Amino acid sequence: MKNKASLKKNIVLNYVKTLMSLIFPLITFPYASRVLGPAGIGKVNFATSVISYFTLIASLGISGYGIREGAKIRDDKEKLSQFTQEVFTINMISTVAAYFLLIVSILFIPKLQMYQRLLVISSATILFSTIGMDWLYTVTESFAYITIRAAVFQVIGVVLLYIFVHDENDYFVYAAILVFTNVGSNVMNFIHSRKFISFSPKRKLILWKHLLPIFLLFALSAVSSIYNMLDSTMLGFLASDVEVGIYTAATKVNRLTVSLVTSTGTVFLPRLVYIYEKERGNFEKLAQKSINLTLLISLPACVGLIVLAKPIILLLNGEQYLSAVPVMRVMSPIIVALGISNFTGVQLFLTLKKERLTLISDICGAVVNFSLNVVFILKYGALGAAIASVCAESMVTIVQLFFARNDINILKILQSVIRYLLPSLVMGTVVAIETIFVSSIYLQLFFGVLCGLGIYFLLLLLLKDQCLMEILDQVKKKIGKKERKISS
Image (cartoon, rainbow, N blue to C red):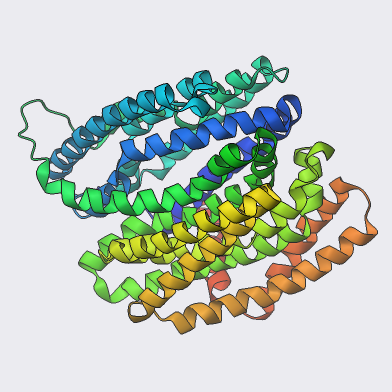
């Protein structure tokens, strides 16, 4: 593992993996949303949101802790094996505890008893997430393996969906297919992990030394995840399955885009930890590259989704979901907010062992989200949940930037925001005019995306944006190497 994979190659591979996770829902969700309807989609999403809390309990703070500490010893197989076996043992104990709490919750909460079968199906996610040890593959930067694995299972998932989901009563099958697609491959992860580590019953495991940092990161993860999952859960309790379905349709593309934006951080995190330990002088330079790449993608994505919300909803979900259009537009700024907070809260604070600052900011966000949800969901339903989410995530981002002012140049970040926001607004204006004169939703999306991307990157080229120039230089070098190989 001493020969680290190219950071640029890892970014590309992780984008491919994330794009596959985007493509799968974009293929399957339009079909499922039409077949199952808002109520069926709402039932599945409510059950998934409930199970997410128990998956959170099972996972503790192990993913972040595993990446941070594992990246330091990844070149020593014995140390990494010892560390992984200790952390995995803790993870299995927490998984058993999570299942126990789930059973108790189903038995004593009447609302959950109505979704008992769905909850049981979705609960397979808890076990598969534990044995998957995704954090280990991030530590070892095995992005090629996880990309191929994800692609294979997503293709199988598409096939299963079209074979077995045919009417509104098939939401149980849909839930099972979602579990299989998202975490079914984790069994392969466990087997494949032997390439990097070894499990031995003879090892003396010292678990207690990991507990304090794990529980600190668990508190961080719990607060962050709970308020991110809070919308669907509170909609299920305070509104209806239909409102949950509308909210799911409205936020599907936004959340998927967030995954694409934050996937940059997944690649940068282990490398930032490694550089901070070994080559501290290059840390700030690499961190600035990460936030620039995040903003380069997130700002035009936010503007584009606001402008194209209606044709996207109509194409993916149909006219029965038209009330999701304003919800989607309101939610779009969350792409930028989450992109920045992922950089500060995960990449920066986790590397610097300042995760308590992320915890404080997420607590602020959770309080805002819960309070506004209670007020707005009762009055506005799914739209109210969207307003609460954007306000909460904006609060988190502002608080984190305040805390990060001594660790990173905030002025440079603000300059980057302006540098990418202005071309994004020009792009959005042109695309909005295009939608007025084109009636077909297919053509609106086709020309909107094509013209939007063209205008945005042309403006960045005219401005000689450094981040884009570096990407183009790397592409030229790759093409040059291939041409030299062919000619030789």
